[in-house]
Length: 385
Ligand SMILES: Nc1ncnc2c1ncn2[C@@H]1O[C@H](COP(=O)(O)OP(=O)(O)O)[C@@H](O)[C@H]1O
Ligand SMILES: [Mg+2]
Image (tube, rainbow, N blue to C red):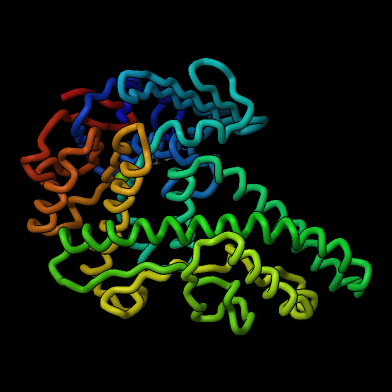
């Protein structure tokens, strides 16, 4: 898949950017703060409805403007798909596909697949559980777009259930809340187990690709391992309990049974705390390198290689999973951070992808074998050459 044409109106510092893209490699060059990342962020946004820099979409609208628009023409095999997103400061956002208005913003999910690697990805290895969960969930949804609905239903049920638990605690009316709670439990378990099962299945498919990419990119030969640790197996129920057991099954019925059992076990505590203590919102993607958790143990260089391997593996997984060709690969500001050897290795691994968009402050940081179409970005204006 490739992006053929992109138009941005009042998207961050791009007041009006109108661009044709070629297949293969495109390098966006410009000094810091000129709008390179903003441009690739818009492409990522059509694909995931999220940004690698912010939660929510308001920061994407140019300051002082009521609305931002992203229009893209995407080539998939010999077909073309046009996608338009309108982000409004006030009122509903709108999406349309092939010029017909779609009802839901998330209907555009699945049309454009992208994989972005950016310095922020170090957070997946080094920071919080939520960074790792977001990585997995974004990939799950790109691989199986239908699941976006399951995630949003789950989050709604979780919110309702939490407020029920909270009010039961405050008013000490646990008795009458219990029957309503049972109904929510059914939904929580059903939707939550679908999420957990899909995470486990995805991580199992991803792991060999991470393994291979890490060997290709890193200079140490530690072996990476990925597992989903789940609260449905928790022994205690403290919110920030350090280690949860790893889940080895992706069978939904089995997971539902464990989830139900744990909920029954933990009910008293949930009523005391006024909070749901079991579910995918508490689970963890465990990343190990040479049998030690990467977080807290991996060196800076190893963490970089690992983060990069996770993204390169994502490309392989999405390729394997799709009939729409390669995902669009975005490398945002990464060459400056890599030494010569790893630059070369990375270049070798990505150069055959259908389309690769690279941003760099200094064009010379990008290895010669990737030298290709260049675009200059200056104060939100993009010029060719
Ligand atoms: N909503 C916005 N409205 C106007 N300008 C913005 C908005 N969001 C970011 N910017 C500007 O975009 C610039 C950063 O662009 P960015 O694409 O991150 O730079 P780089 O070329 O270094 O990747 C900053 O100057 C910032 O002020
Ligand atoms: Mg940038």
